[in-house]
Each structure stands twice: as C-alpha cells, then as structure tokens.
Length: 334
Image 1: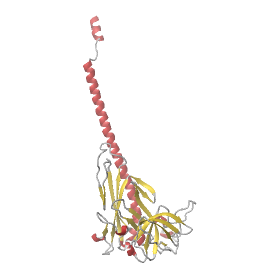
Image 2 (image 1 turned 90 degrees about the vertical axis):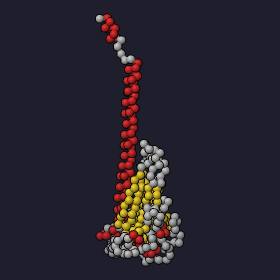
Image 3 (image 1 turned 90 degrees about the horizontal axis):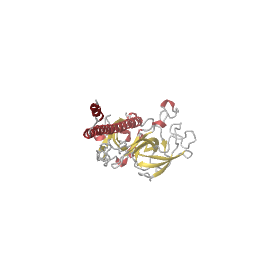
Image 4 (image 1 turned 180 degrees about the vertical axis):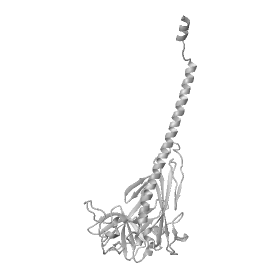
C-alpha cells in the first residue's frame, strides 16, 4: 500500500513531454496567427477595393447625369467644353442645368429662347489657358430666377457662382469653338464675372454668349465638382468627344471621333467642328484603394491607359479600378 502511494505521488510530465507539448502549442498558435493575418489582409483588400468600386459608381452616376442633361435650354454651342491633357487629368465643363428653371416655370418671354448671358464688353485678347479675365454681361441671371447666393445674404442673386464654371462661345460663328473657365468672383451689381480660364476659343469680335456650367477636375488625387470634394483617391479623368459634323447622318462615324491615344482636342477645347454637332462624350476615371495592399506593399502596380494618357503608378501596392462611360447628350440630338 505504501509503495503504490509513493508511485502515485511521483507521477507527472517528463521534460521531453513538456517540450513536445510546448512545441505543439507554439505551432498551433503560429498557424492560427498566420491564418488570422492572411484573413485580415484579404479583408482589408476586399474592403478597400469595394470602397473604390462604390465611389466609382457614385461618381459615374453624377457625371453621367450632368453630361446627359448638358445643353438643356441653352444654346447647343454652350453645352460642353473641356481641356485635354496628355500629362495630367482632363477638365470637364457641362452646362449647369441646376441653374435653369423647368421649361414650364420660365417667364413667357424666355420659354422659347436659348438661355444665355450676352457678353457686353470684349471677351478679351487675354483669354488664354490659365489667365484671369473679367467678363461684363448683360445679366448674371439668364432665366429670370437666380439660383445661387454669391454674397452670403441668404438670398439667391446669380446663375453664375464662384468655383462653378462658365462656357463662352460666338453665337454667330460656332467654328470658333468654345472657351471655358472657373468662376472666381461674381459682381452682381455690375453684372460681371471674374474667370480663371481653362480652355480658349478662337478669339475675335463676334456675338459672344456665356452660360453657367458645372466643372469637374482632379486636384491632388481628389475629384472636385464646382470646388466641392466628391471623392478621394481619383488618379485620372480622361475624355473623348464624338461628333456628327461631317456626314450629318445621325451617327458617330470613325472620322468624327476626337480623342484617344496620341490625340488632343484642338486648341485644348472643342475641335473646330461645329460644336452643335457634338453627340457623345466618353469619360474614364481611374480610382485606387486608399491604402497599400498589406500582402504586397511594394507591388509596382499596373498602369492604366485611358484615352491619351497612361497612369503609371509608382511602387505603392495599391489596387486600381477603371470606369468608362459613353454618354449621349440628349439635348443636342436633332
């Protein structure tokens, strides 16, 4: 009885058994942590790619709406304008339909006319890309009802607004193309609009008109609409323009396409073709994830070709998505 008790008291793990158990536990922990880390990295990538995809859809929906409605109740020449860049994102202007009342709400004297402000002074010989000009208009309200408050008095006073866009054209000579710029200030009392020009038309005397516009541009990797941040991590925006100005058959033919690799828009604005023959705009966005891929932080990435520019990212490990839309300008279709 005594010997059995002593043997029971001395029972336990040997050192070898303990080391084996510790090694087995360490292996299980290591494997579990590795699996957890891999799953987390996969989740991060999926979450970021999904966020970029959702941002792309939201951006595309808004831009497509604005392009589709361009030219509503304004002269066809003033429907759209753009500056094409081969080493930077393009800049898009489309007429601001938000500043126009519905047709059935317009004053009777405006219901049948093309709404635009007349440039009463000279358009200025200084209208060149990146310059600053001040335009004198017959009225900063083009439809009888102002849409924006430019002086923070809680009352609308103008259809043109700071950080919004402006499109100018010669109503009697569409071959001059169109010009566009970003409004920096509005003098309501003097019916004047200060503009930083983005694209220049062919200058000269003429019957110059102006319409308010939405402007889309990318600044430091973020997309802005009328100066308001729309989305971050947008690397590029490129455009192509489709006309029906040569055959006039109601279709866009191969020789009526402007844009694509190695091609620039004439004068960095609309081509010399009659801008009223513009039928479609194709626009492409390149979005990237907000952070590096945790599994491949030093991945060189893949350059994205959009029209006449290739975005060639550095070693950043980010995923990229390209969204391309071709939109028909319904208000310009004959």
